[in-house]
Amino acid sequence: MYGSENLVNLYREGEFKACYFSFTYTPFIENGEITGVIDMAFEVTDQVLARMSKDLIIAQKIELEQTLRASEQRLQMILDTMAEGVGIIDLDSTVVYANQMAQKILRLSKAEVGNWKFQNPNWKYFRVDGRSLPADEHPMVVMMKKREPVFDQEIGIETLDNEKFYISINAAPIFDGNGELTGGVGTFMDVTSRRLISQHKDDFISIASHELKTPVTAMKAALQMLEKGKGELKPEMHERLIQQAIKGLDKFSKLVNDLLDTNRISRGQLELSHSNFSIKSLFEDCCGHVEQMGIHEVILKGDATLKLHADEQLLSQVLVNLVNNAVKYAPNGKQIIVNAEQHQNNMAKISVVDQGPGIEEDKLVHLFERYYRSEHGGGNYSGLGLGLYICAEIIKKHGGKIGVESKIGKGSTFWFTVPLAES
Ligand code: ADP
Image (cartoon, rainbow, N blue to C red; front, side, top):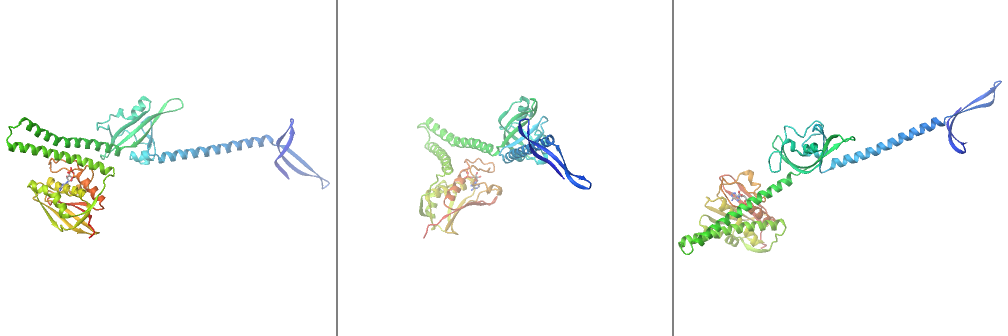
């Protein structure tokens, strides 16, 4: 029999100490009979304590590793779910790490990370004003050269297949324990939509100022001539200049009203004041001015007796806009037809049909977008691209629909539906 590494509390050097002994018990045989037991004890305290401390170290190491792994997983999760791209480059400009967002923004596959350089022949960098960005002015290059962080640098990228996007980037150098530069880290966001909005705003301001200036210039010229020729102008000339000034003023106030309406719509301040009125009275209010110009003939067809339940003033604005567009964009078409018919779900459908040049199919879907204007055979038409947008918002607010059908060479039909009055 034996006992292995048994704990024995021994009183040693003035105190009890945990000691370990291994025992072996062998029978003591005399004349073929067991007369006793030989008990041999070997002290193994040192070996047991040494092994225990090794086990403790291993257990501590395992715990440390688990803590480290958990913190690494946490960090990885943060990097994977970050809205910013994070990329690390080495001294050779190779992207050695890119988190998921960085791969998405930079259009990189996982396999490319590790052997892809951010400066490569397939990518062209440019500044926000469109000028090309020299290689040594790239924020990552500047940061590596200066060994200092750079912040909030916005740059554009054009890929080989002409795709353009913009990023805003912060870059910082990475040093090892000896203070040696080993690479750099870049954090960046895709700011393409922000940049496009700001570009659209700039474009809009430039168009709006030009559009507003044109009628003001015409008004000013007419008034200056009236002032110069005081009393000496022929009556016809006098009348023509006054008409020119009035026309300029009308155009100017139409533009300002479109801007104010758009502002009201985007603030959600378009309120409806409903009443019942007939299509005939709406037509008479909205189309008389066209007949007076003597170029187009506006004809009401269909069921003119239909009664609508809508905001009369806003609906007049819609019809005037559609009829004025027919006059403006179909100047050679003689007739403009306004057609009224009963539609499903207790609605009326009103269409404005012109005999103009028509609209290309790919443009049709954009016509009701805010600020959308399309070129018309080089014709110089004034407008801010807001008229149809405002019409669409007014009709939407009434619970109706608006649309267009058009074919090149076959004219255009703009239509909308609005609720009928209960009979
Ligand atoms: P704007 O106020 O600049 O005229 P709109 O929103 O009224 O803008 O119209 C947007 C675009 O729709 C115009 O630039 C024009 O190209 C097109 N469009 C509108 N009405 C017609 C029409 N009757 N015939 C052809 N094109 C039209």
